[in-house]
Image 1 (cartoon, rainbow, N blue to C red):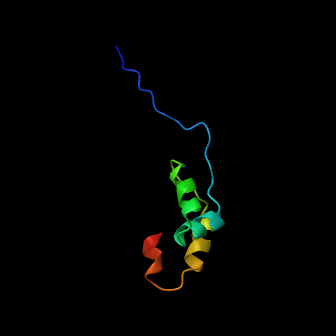
Image 2: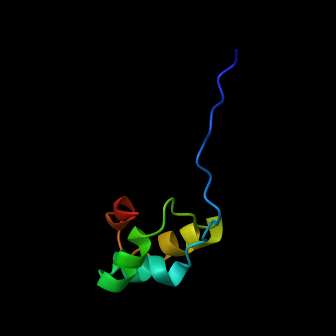
Length: 64
């Protein structure tokens, strides 16, 4: 007899906007709380590159 494996699949996937990521990285508590509610976080390649492009020094990318 084969075992049945049930996996949890989120009903909705939310794409995180660049502005929300930037607000979180700048320490805005409301943005951090909202991001904490999203599991898993999903962002586009464009958003990722926009955040990296906006980094001010070489140490900041470690925060992303």
